[in-house]
Amino acid sequence: MILHRLPINPKELARFISAFASRFGSTILSFTVLFVASKLLPTFEYGLYIFLFSVGSALGLIAVFGQQILVVKHYRRTSIDGDTTNDELIRVNINWLALGALLLSCSAVILWFVGNAWPSPYNALPIACLFGAVFALSEYLQNYFRIHGRISMSLLPREIIWRGASAIAMLAAAALGLLYSGIEAMLIITVLLTIVTIYQLIDFAKTEGPALLSRLPRQRERWRSESLYFVANNLLNACASYLETIAIGAFLGLDKAAFYFVALRIAMLLTLPITAIDTVGIPLIAARFQSGDSRGAQKLIGRLSFASFGISFAGALLIALVGRHVLALFNQEFAAHFEVLLILCGAAVIQSFFGPGSWLLMIGGGERFFLIIRSILFVAYLGVLYLLASLFSLPGVAIASVLFTLSSNLGATIWVMKRWGIDNMATAFFQPIVLRRYAAKQNHPSAPFTRPAQADGAPG
Image 1 (cartoon, helix red, strand yellow):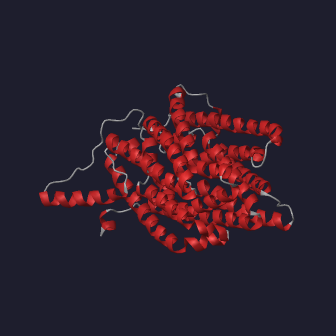
Image 2 (cartoon, rainbow, N blue to C red):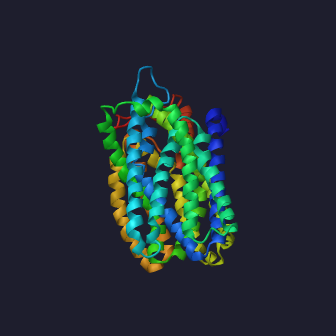
Image 3 (cartoon, helix red, strand yellow):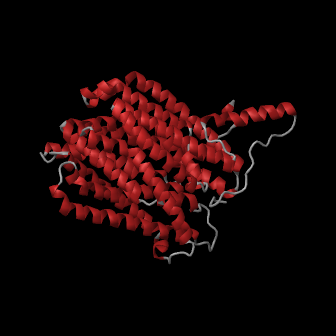
């Protein structure tokens, strides 16, 4: 009955199914890579691989300089003849991406010469820098292709081909006697990511050839200002995603970092629905914002948030039943920290409950607010992280993650409600139904959502 009253666009549903299938396949292959590496490498070397991967991924998220958000926010899926906004936007994106790749590549060269005297794992940081340079380009290209509705080109190269090839290449290297440590494992995945990213870049260059040669636009100053906010927020995102694993590896030991990363990856299974929904839904939501359809955006957001939360909550119950056995598959010692996995699952369910709230804030003109509130929260989070880690070790680290996830999502939700009059929580799914029934009783049409005054920098 609900689905009949709230019909889903078949094209949107097909894209969601494609994105979810790709994300699910990506997760399975990601676990395959982790599992293969855990069986081929000693615990310390496996921890080294996890540490370098976390550092490289964090650097990549920073070095993309927020261009993956800028292109989603401003790229016009239906451009008017003579409008050069898209070409100018792509030109600005390329400049920032080239700067990020250059900085990380130069850092790798410098660290290569000065890092030999450093102890492990810090002497292997040049590889993490090179991986980060490629990862930044890949992160941008994923978002570029998804705003065109090209879900296969967006997800297939990195999420499926790269991960699958990495597992196979590690097995082959071990069989040939070439896999000695986490460094070789990191080199393998870096080379393979470079190959699939080049494939995407070729397609990108064919499509955006004229834009790559265009002059820098006058409005680049405004886009530069937005990019700086996105850069700062990406820095916080990178810290929130990888700081705990990196800190555990640096202060508690690489073996504990290996466990925490595996537990975090298992918990992140619960964010698959929201990730798939973001892949398909954010460009659609942005298009509704651009056309001023606030009511349509609310309906779409309510459905997406409710769906992501329902699937995530069911997944959390399943992990509570089988999670200990899954941890033991990687390492028997990991199962002793099962409670940490349960806590991290709580953070993932919270993330899914709030739906695409942070994305809504970023594309809706709230990047400055988000930066301020998250900076304040992050400072508090560092203090809480240190205190809880000192008192409770690994469970304390996980609890700090839950608190930071909850507080940052609440901040984003409050802003979106005040500025756009839109509720992005899972419970918003029921609001149109309740209001419609109430309106029917009052015998007059309902108009529950109206577009408020436009936010500074908001599309429209």
